Image (cartoon, rainbow, N blue to C red):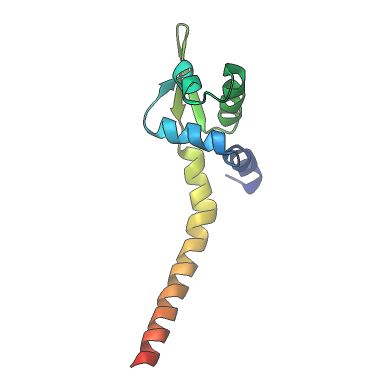
Length: 109
């Protein structure tokens, strides 16, 4: 995934309500009506707008079963962010911290 393709994911994750939706979906799939109940401060339309943004970013998969809409967390875009940003920067930081620890402990001896 190119960095430009990650932009919609970052935008979707920037909102605390959408992150809360993803936290709920991490527990398992939920019907839209059940998600609406979890956010009493929002109207159904407001929740649906958040779900649409998550779906457009690829973070949400939707399956319709008759009149029911089931929402599923898609972790693939989150993994792409991890591989592109977190893992890339984590290794050098961990190595630097190990060297610093060894240096500090060496001075104590």
